Length: 174
Image 1 (spheres, helix red, strand yellow):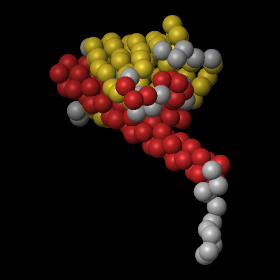
Image 2 (cartoon, helix red, strand yellow):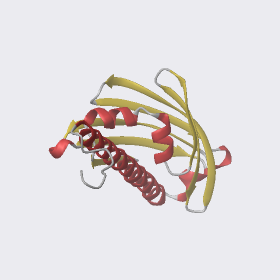
Image 3 (tube, helix red, strand yellow):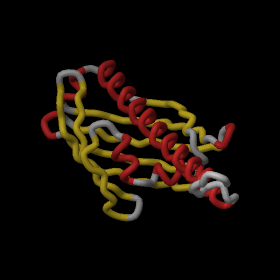
């Protein structure tokens, strides 16, 4: 199965890159992710619950980053075992480019293979589930970065007000 897509992230490329390398941001953005922990430099262990059609499974797996060109691209290799439900493995190439208005264009191409009960469900259902997982991830990731950007802008505005003398309390007659 192959997935491709692009998403405009409302944050500068450096902040987007940092978020893509932050296990806590990723864990919070991946639907069903129970844990994502760094085990070595550029390697992570993950556990997640997934439902694909009639199959519910808990997968445990590994992620490894390679071909890292900070802050513009990397490759993620992944593999996971879901017991009787089967397995999944593959890789994804992720690329970041500056976009208009200080945003970042995130592009990805992923290829994956599944086996076991999941493969028996049928490729159309598996492909649809994988596309939904990817879309849900990018929607959550984008929302998180948009919220972080808004907080950073608000903090900068408050700091500017304070530096200009406009941040303190006002008394009658000021």
